Image (cartoon, rainbow, N blue to C red):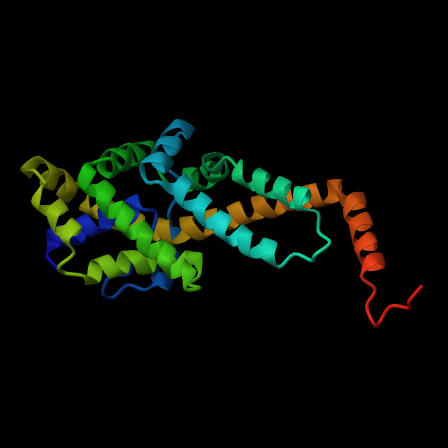
Length: 246
């Protein structure tokens, strides 16, 4: 892989919130490097993070996958489970403010300057096409059962391995000399950001999962009486062989 293409790929990897291990690198090495780094002096702002999430389609991508997973969970609910309670849980999960959940994590790893550059880089028409392509691959991998923490990295890796990737080649071809100079100047810093992404994404996914669980537990607790009554009523109307008949 050409030096320019490697740096360009690094920029793409960071823009989509992922990480990729090049030759002589491993995920373990990236995590070890991340532990040695310090939080930025001027971290990403909430406004920047909201813009970054929008430009990189993070919220729409997450919402679609969440809906699919919750639909699968709904199908596994016992027959007596009240649909309005499940609807309330699903609505609460839909309403989660993703940038707000993510902000404390991103502020540990991403600077205000880095965020500004990533937003600018990601907003170009060519990069938007490439981001959508990566997200489509990520979604397909998750549908196949790949862990969310691994799916994005595998999606990006498939782009890296595809030497004939049309969008990647087009993105490189449309770079101006000024773009190439800026990318070259950022090369070392992009390398340094690699271990941060290996750490950031799993932390964010866990924080989001914890928030979803917290909301579901709160709503379930609020409707505990209703749930208990629905279960008793169902069992009374559908006695099993293991239950004594009245």
